[in-house]
Image (cartoon, rainbow, N blue to C red):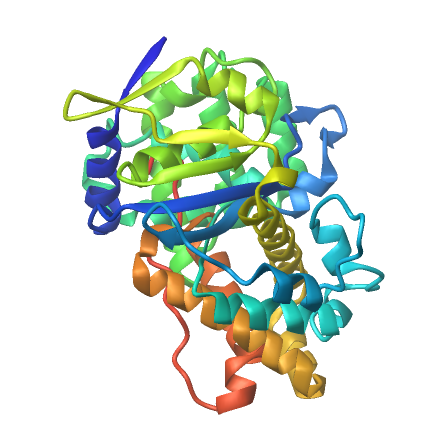
Length: 396
């Protein structure tokens, strides 16, 4: 049985992000979308291209205290719930929409988002970029020898991620030859990554170039020491093996709250081997339920699926395309993008911890800017974008 000290995790989040602990008692409900079970390197690159494109999203709704009333009949009416249908699922909400843009203007999307706004519920999510998460162990291995650069942690992680995206084939070739994340010859691994960065990077052009050069210098030192602690002594090629830690993390961060997850047997088994403690008091603040028996978990399924589709849509369309799309949107689409923006902002104002993005800061900021352009900026013409405070790293 593994014992976890919740206080340590809360302290780390505050230290790295400047976000105070959340001590209010609430009830959080969860479902997931995009769980590929395992994310690994193969001879062809990656075992799951969908996981490479889209986030793993653990998301749902929350309310203050242990009990809360919602208007279920009006929810059923908004979603055209059929008699005999076992439970609400995102596939029923998305229905026959050909793409996200057509879905967001549908009557079902409007009905659900309007209902959610009226309900008084908060949304929450933890969104994980699988590739970003698989890379940041490299950077997190460098702080032992370079603590003076910790203030640039998110910038350096973002620079590495952007570099890998731009030169993916060459970087992944190095990873495969070195059985990443089970690197045996750290010196050669670091030298090869450094040479690749040196060949492409111009550190005089823009900030990412500077941070990429900073990373290169740190890797040179690691190569001389033959040490990258987080990418050594792991299973070869296995980038992400267990998603249960993202469930556990929410129970740790919101230790005073109760957490209700959709039944997931693999996760349940793994979490049954954990014990959470805070101030030496044992915490039993989570449970798993059958989704068809809990309407809040069913709503969480809708949220998780919707958010994953939203993030895919925002990521696949460059900012210039988003501006063009925004100019052609129908009123219902503008309204619903605005409602999504409002729901995220409401939760962010409750606590930045409600919204977690394990992704590069640039990606997170661009997503919110794009969402604003599609929705509230179209509607109000002037509104400052949300700044996402809690974006970034694996060790946070």
